[in-house]
Length: 205
Image (cartoon, rainbow, N blue to C red; front, top):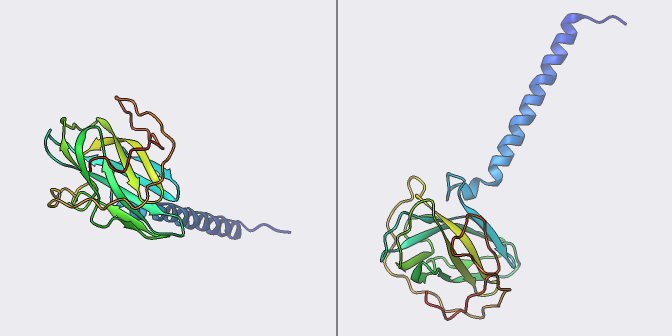
């Protein structure tokens, strides 16, 4: 059986083109998996966590912020369960209060993304300056899933998402907050998440 150089070269070229197309397709697919959360964050210094059916991704505090001011918590929440849940509270030792977001309901199988446009979960009455590069403990409480505390980095808000927080939003009343296991959060928190810390529903914020 003869081997013609022209045919062999064409075959190799075709195979290489197919491989390149496959690689591009896979790369596009991988980017698409996180495309929705990319709206909330363009850098990588964020934390993630999960409690019950709720996943938190790309979480960071928009800073810097001075003592006595507010700080928004840029974040993405995903409800992987079959029932509706709700963000009822956000709190931190670095703040005297907190405001749940306007769109606090987490639909089953859905996601809520919050950027620093005044609609994100917000820490109020900061009791210290929050500088870029620091990390603070932030506790999120859900009506059904319970509470989770993450060591959240302070970072500049992504371009196009730096509007000041909106006027005061009332925190929705908790319906039935389920307790979750308690885990201590070190005072000098790092950027790795600390999950499962329970805070009472009646806390300020």
